[in-house]
Length: 264
Image (tube, rainbow, N blue to C red; front, top):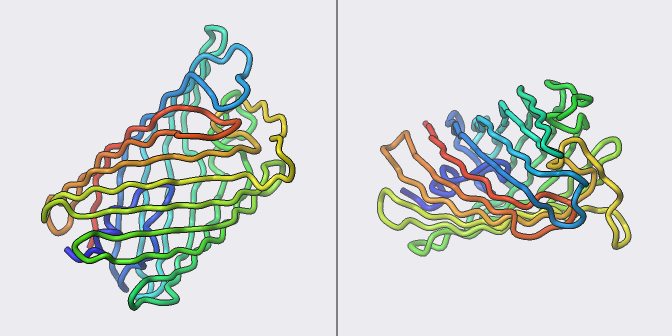
């Protein structure tokens, strides 16, 4: 399988599919089960906080409008649980929905694309005891670079800025990834996916949120490792481990993902 196509098929949530765009009329569908658990934070701990879990089923899809323009989107059905002072609060339902477009500017010895994303927070109650989202619209612009390394795999790098409406602080986003085929049917991928809050000054604002995964301002670096198996021309199976590696004012913890990808 060509390395560029491998980069598209192997792409995870929420970092999307790298700089490559889908061919006109082709589609990519990823169905994933995620489980995240945390009992500690980077930075100050909220008093009485014991544990937070997020079990969710996520769909991510892409469709090639033209060879150079790809429509993409994602949605997640969540079950959140938070325990404080021995008291447990849960909430279930759909979280934020992401919709976006990726346009390829250049595709020769390397790939360069631009991407716009809109986060729609309309499917949940932001005032719930344990909200499924922060209730704010986000608008993100991102520049994406990709380079095929032949038999050595591929390399990708991304940089973006996310405008967050309301109280949440705007963010700088960055990502570095590398992937390669181990055999004709097995591939590996690693990613460093980062968020840096855009607030001026050295101190983050006080963000005592009912959902500890949704502070108004935070820094976070996640290290993601994926192993994939190409079942046939249309289906791929993946297992991904993502660890919150460093940050400030956000949760520590590890996410485990099992996914099936169908593409045509």
